[in-house]
Structures are given as C-alpha cells and as structure tokens.
Image (tube, rainbow, N blue to C red; front, side, top):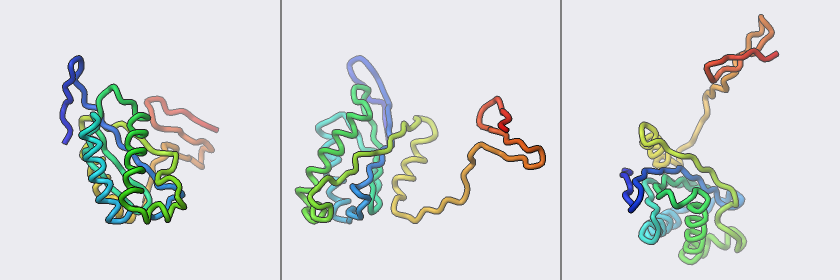
Length: 165
C-alpha cells in the first residue's frame, strides 16, 4: 500500500498506472518472464525512488502501479523501467529475444494515468492484479444521447448539456 514519501523539502504520494505492450503484441510474457519482471522491479526499487505497488501481466502486456517522487516525470519512469527490464529479460530469458527477432521487448508506446489517493488506488490495484482474465465490454456510456423524435442529440458529461444537430 502506498504511503507518503518524505524528502528534505517535500512530502508526496504520486501514483501512476502504466501499461507496456510487448513489441508487435507478441505473446512472450510467460511464467519465467513474470518471475524475472518481479525480481527486476524489486532491484529497480532499490536503486531509484520508484515503488512498485502492483505488477500484473497478461501474455502481451504488463501493468504497473508505481509510486514515485516528484523529481521523476512519467516519461522518465517509463525510460527507466522499460530499459532496465528489457535488458535484464533478454539476459535471463533468451528465448524471448528469439521470438522478437532480436529486437526490443517493449513497443515504443505505453499507457499512463495518475491514480488518486482517495478511492482509485484499490480499484486500479485490483485491476492490475486480475490481468489475464478474459475481458468482455458490455456497456460504455459515451455521454451522447440520441432523441430520434426531436431530431437532436444531447451531448452530456458536464453541467451544461448542449444540443447538437
């Protein structure tokens, strides 16, 4: 669980949810790679002010819930984690490098979102924990509601609903 990080001139609780897809979305995250990622992230925590609160894997991507200090931007965190994990995974699991034709383990893209101190940390942690389960989207509220009788669309989502023709 996250805690306030006390430094000489600040106290912070900054948490980020990152998702790193594998290159070409290749299925390379095996049990052996899972174990390597866990061990590598523990070592990263010892060298940097990055704290891995949760790590979840699926066969073609990895989720991280990371707490960091304000001196690290999300981009810097991505560079640190991607570069070190890639180098170490290739060293510990050479079959992964063969599956990726000797290239990179991570795609160049990633997902990042901040996580609120109040209310969202447990939700994101549970989401990351439960990766690998089959996902089915049943509904998504787009914020747009059609009224065919009136011939208008109401765009919802803020205090001021507006009519769009």
